[in-house]
Every structure is written in structure tokens, then in C-alpha cells.
Amino acid sequence: MRIPLSITRSYRPNWGLWEGVRELIQNAKDAEVEHGAPFSVEHTGNKLVITNEGCELNHRALLLGETTKAERDDLIGQWGDGLKIGVLALLRTGHPVTIKSGDEIWHSDIAPAPEYDGAEVLTFNIRKSRMFRKNVEVEIENVSRSEWLTIAKRFRFLPGEQYYNVIKTYAGSLLLDEPGMLYVKGIFVEQVAGMDYGYDFNNVDIDIDRRTVKSWSRDAECKSLLELALHEKPELVKDVYRMIMGNTKDVAYLRYSPINNKTAIASLREMWTTQQGEDTIPVTSDDAAKELEHLGVRGVVVNVVAANVLGAIVGTAETTMAKLAFATEEVFDPDSIPEGNILLEALCILENAGHAIDLRKLEVVDFKDQRTNGQYCSGTIKISRKRIAEGLSATLSTLAHELAHGNEGALTHGQALQKILEDVIASLLPASPSCSPVAN
Image 1 (tube, rainbow, N blue to C red):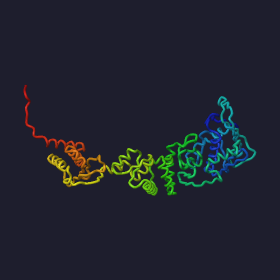
Image 2 (cartoon, rainbow, N blue to C red):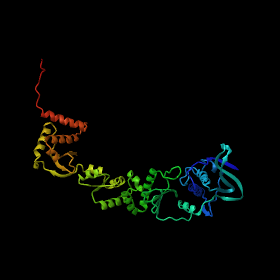
Image 3 (cartoon, one colour):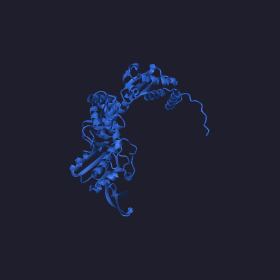
Image 4 (spheres, rainbow, N blue to C red):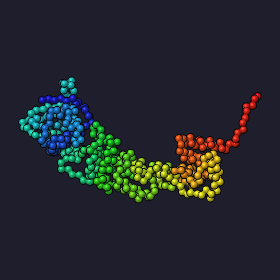
């Protein structure tokens, strides 16, 4: 029986020996999970034999899109086309493939097909075997021992292999001794520079050729794996802190989603304060550090990830500046300062305009942020001594501005301020005499 498939020689031209073996071993692993058919891989001479015991291969497996693996999270493949494309890649690179299943032997070839006007397509020639076997054997020829040893290292589930310094979680495994090595369900995908750990993901988005993990998906899954690993091994937080400060790709997603592990958060806080000192804030620029310096706080310039993660723990530049913007360094008795007469005159003007300020709720202060002129908080008005020293106009406008914040009616702050200023102007202007137009 001859079965030509609608897969041309040139399909997936960048696939070779590794991709072909990868797909066939992946299918064998899936059969073990789906059908309880234990698989083995044996290299003898120049032949690689992949075997599943206790199952058979149906001709429907040659249909594109035909599979029993769809929507199964416990299986490596998704659409079952790896068998066909893997065989094609192997044939194209000089590695004949023979499949023995039940009482049949499937010989594969890339041959002209009259059905497709002579186009070279993947073809299976199926004949009956002299013996029946309750298994599936896939034989791949012309695979040297050195080639197989190189390929075998890319699988993490081959029988007899042991791995150490691995932290397993439900989302995958953290590989402490394999920096940058990325696997998906035990199969190597790529090695990424700039990573301190390796990762074996259970669920991540990869490109169609399984050669790269999409960066946004990788970053999100690395974050999940790290957090889960911290629950299993809290002392890893030292490495996580180093990665955060070093801005490695392992922690890239922390820029958007900080750590939620309470124990890890406490440890990160301790490491930050031990290294940088108390009352230090992570910032991303020298300008932000200078802004904090005005408020008596030391800003330490770090990368964006560190600023986001550690800022959420010890405080960000924005929250710290907002908190300290109205903090005071000293409070003065209005009667004891030389500028007191200016303040008194401004208060009298406001009182005459119908907007008296209760002296018990007025404070003259030095704000930590010298740029702050005044503050209204819970009925109390604070005004900067420096602002009073600038004169009556500056003092009056600041008091009016803060007084407008205490408006409890339907007016907005702007409308309340306008009303106060109109009343002040009206109180300062002399009564206007009546006048008549002058006739020419």
C-alpha cells in the first residue's frame, strides 16, 4: 500500500536531524502518557530505535491534523503532525525512517507523486510483516554515536538519566545549575544569555519551529516559577535579590508584577537596608535622587526592575516625595518671628473680607521640601515661613489658596479660591462714587 501525503520536500526547510528526532521522541513520550505504553530509546551501531510497548499505530496517524492529543495538557504535542514532519526532516537529511507496528512495516520516502503532478512529497509504503508485534518501533538510520549523545542531552525524561539541583513545582522545574537553558516539558528549546537559572516550563508559548520561547511568555513563566520555588526553598531569595540588582532576564517580569511571597519580601527588605542603609529609596535616575535629597532622603540609582520590586517594599520615589512634600522640620510661634507682622496683616485682610482663619488652626513652619508653600489638612492650614518672608502678596495668596481647600460647599477648589479673592478685592476697594457720562 502506497500513501502519498500532501507534504512537499521543501516543507519546514530549516528542520534537520535534531528536529526530526525531537518530534519522534516527543510522540513516543505522549504515547506513554496517553496509552500507558512505556517508551525506550536505544542506539545500536548507527541506528536509533524508539519503541513504545503495548500500542499500535493507525493509518489515520498519517492524516494532517489527525490526533488524539488535542486539548490534553499532560501530552507534549498538540496536533499530532510532528510524526509526519519529523520523518520528512530526517529523510531530507539522509536518515531513512522505518516504522514497525502490529503486523505492518511502514517504509518512508520522498518520491514523485502522480497525484500531485509529479511533485516530490512524503510517501509511506506499507507492507505486511511476517510477525505481529504489540508495539511501535521507529528506526532512524545513519545516526552516529556522537550525534546521539549530543541529542540525548536535550531531553530531560529519557530513561536512566538523573538530574540534580532541580526544584520541581506544578508550573515546571527550576534548574539551578543550567543557566539560560530553556526546556518545555522536558525538551530543549533554546539557551538564552543573561539568565542565572535554567527553566523547564510546563506551559509557555513557543514559535512554530520550537526553537525559541516567546519573550513575554518566558518572562511571565519565569516569574511564576521563581515564586513557587521560593515557597519550596526560601533561601533562594539571596539569588533572586542578586538577579534583581543585576537585572537578569530571569526577573524581567517583576518590572510589571512584583513578588507576592511575604517571607521573600521581608528578606528582600533586610538585604536592601543592609546593603544600602536605612531610609534609602531605589530610583531610576540621578534627577530622582536629587529630588529626594531635597527632602533629606537618599536615593540609590538602580535598574527599573529593582526600582519596581524594592520600591514596592521600601517605598518608591513618587510615594516618598508625596509623603514628605508636606513634612515639616520646624514649627514657629507667629509672634516670635520677624515676619509675624506680614502674616497678621494678611489675616486681617481675610477677616475683613469675611474669611477669617482660626489662629488655633494656623501653623507657621519650615517644610522639608523648600518648594512647598502651604498645606491644608483636616482643617489646619500650614504656611511656609519662607513664603511669608516673600511679602504680603505671597502670604495672602497662599493663605487664600489653602483656605479654599476647606470649602465644604458645592464649589470646586478653583471656584472657592476665586470667591475668596473677589471678596478680598471688594474689601480693599473704597466705595465708588456714582458717576454720569460726560456729554461732549
